Length: 165
Image 1: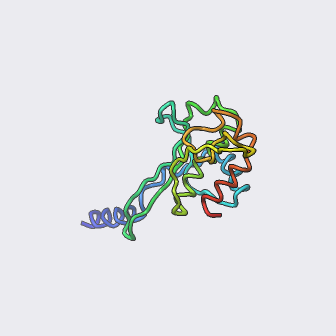
Image 2: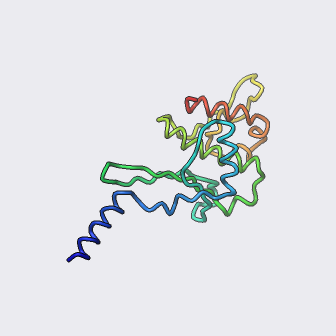
Image 3: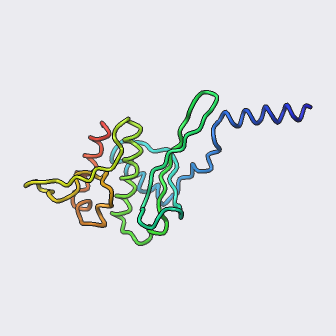
């Protein structure tokens, strides 16, 4: 009888803490890009970021949300997952853009902002006309043209404005 009560108590303690954070891994190679983002924006990311193999070939990265219930209510766990099958073939600017884009989804969500993609293009005589309006575009900017490399600071500033910083 004591063993049954002990098992129930331990089970309640573990379940009240949420899921085991096996998915809270922060890959060191990816964290190098996260660190640059944190230095440049002043924002801190402390959730999981890892390489995965289960993304479609057309997907470079995703931000996932997992919800779970605890005794104190519903909780959320976030992770950024990067397609390892595509990573090695990318240059550093594209890798940075992908990480910054996924971090953008996370920080927009955390600040109750629209975190969906925005595929508008800058129009008119602006210095960066023809480039995507935001880093939060559907497809990687770097894989289409040099806009991210040339206007990197613009994209960081624009993201911070979206986030509300």
